Length: 402
Ligand code: PEP
Ligand code: MN
Image (tube, rainbow, N blue to C red; front, side, top):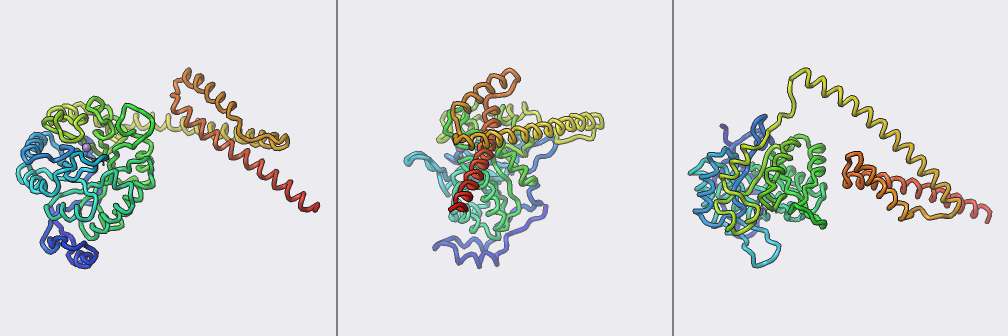
């Protein structure tokens, strides 16, 4: 395998922006394996890209024991958090740089590549100095463009692969912005990690998946590998398999799963960690589907059904256009009778009725609510437009008379 290093000249330039006391390892060599853009995190037809390891590095023995138990499971990357972003002060905030030599031992003894979370320039330097193979940006950093830019600046000219977790809040633009900042720093091997989003509403998940956000990311950046962090989505052990399978069914490239030899006594995220043995079982049970096939009859059938779907979609658009014309008609009617656009009771009535009718047709309440809210918003916009145009016309007429 060819090996390349970062460009030391760029580092010298970049040194100017480096804080006092930053290490001089730039002038030593920090070699990283070379592979083509993004291919590193992409799944093969039969094998998703697997990242596993403890939420946090706790002791040298713990890290090595977990790595030795995971290595035979065929994982691609060993994870361990060494700086832990905690919501409240006083909780375990990670071992820090002291754990970096432990990860080097993991590499030497098991051959596994390693990855850690970095949240600022200092942590980037520390990770590179100690030969960490892949960096990841955590959800609490992605949310903050200042942090992401600081990490991006520290990465200028470094050929280290970077994985970018989604921001804590369900904001696709922030996620895309963070990816772009890292790309602009010249990093070529980039992947995204979907770890779910904070939500006010109670749910069985620690972080609501909102799959549609990751699906939209895939539409906008089709080449970008996406990895599902089923541990942080679930927040428990019981649902890990279900979420991992759902991710693979959506053609995700891989999984990141927290594993610990003594999960109940883990120093962080104890409820969601599983032993390497249970992890192995989970991986065995996953059904890895292919994205496509050469089978002619399958392709013909698929094409047929897709054709019918296109026809139904067109019918839906025609119906929606008809509905919007009615909204405009109502707008004109309300305008001439001086009635406000929004009648909350009417909207509640529409929703209630649709929930019942939807249920009878196998459509979920969540879907009905989202769909009808969008339709209702558009109707209101149309009516408002009509009312606005009518009052403008009235004003103009008054002015003309004056
Ligand atoms: C982690 O991976 O341990 C972690 C802190 O994740 P996140 O940034 O997704 O909360
Ligand atoms: Mn964790």
